Length: 498
Image 1 (cartoon, rainbow, N blue to C red):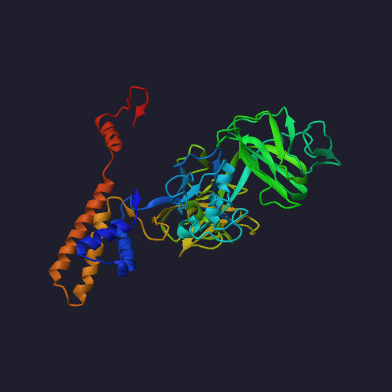
Image 2: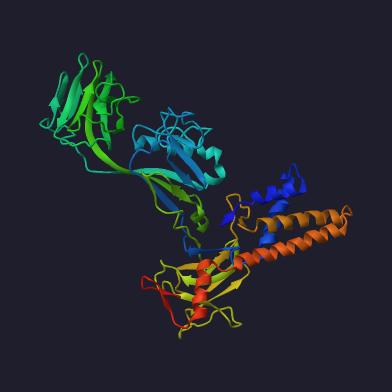
């Protein structure tokens, strides 16, 4: 496990009595990196893989929502924890790391009319998934270093259309109430008396989310409502949903609702007393799920480090991080990662048209140009590579994708080095020694103090290496088994302990 370097900073500041260490931060970062390189134990660095192709690729991932989150549930995007809250909770879900829970999970993810939904907070805009305007207290503005490295979008997975004759080519499937008429492929309601437009024989399931889409051919006043489909909040029948809020003539309207306990066998539309309008092309579908898709803004392996997590039973992450990010591999060359410490291996990538997973060997000969060519001297056929500076060169013509394994120095979102847990004291000691050396070089500190700091650094450096190299309990058990017998020992379940 690796921890943020800030913990080391506070240790140094406390030990040296520094009230404000911000002006030393750049030096602290460099010295911390030096200390970890000098410790250099097996656990100091992390093993990573990076893939390269001709075009590269952006890393992607999804979080799939299947129902409304419970207040207090959260998802974590690249280290930023976003909580779902009811508007009645403390703070009214208006903090940058809070998302207001809507009537259904669709409006929870995309809701420009309330405080704002998840996509608005991640895109910082108002309306239509965050395309215009700004929310200054949204998550994207409060945590830009973590969230602004990716683009965000949402998409629905829906069932089949539940409605028959939604285009009103026939009126046989519809029950028509007062002031409603069906003809010429449309349904029209005249103002004066409220009336229903209903289709029976349907199956709505309480608690599930549904969508309705329709066209407004003309509209001069009043409202069209989805009648008594929402769960009751007033103590009477199930609540209505006003479908024409913010609409105008010529619009195509889409609304979502979470079904209540009544009207589960029918679609009931009500024209208000003042509703004077014509509608067409009604489509009603069950919403099965909604995906929040995260796509890295930049091509490359770095996007794969964007982490995902969820403690929400109704939100499933596609993986612990984004996947699929690839850097660019052209002309049989690739640039090694900036945080590469040691190259461990090179193989042909999974998507290569030939020789998938073939392991390449590092060239041991003095020749670094074309070797292993075929007999007509046109193509290179050696499964070898060599490293020149920060570039890796492949000596084979038919390789479309390369995957490398390497030891990397872990860094946080700021690009600052992370410290192996257990190395904090040693790294802090190295930083203090380097700071006091400056005073010694300037004639402001006696040498014995810097020598004492140096001596303790070497002791703590060795201790950190020793602690990392100490076998675990399982490893000690394996060593004991090998030491005490030449025969494998079987456990109670019949497996062999090696």
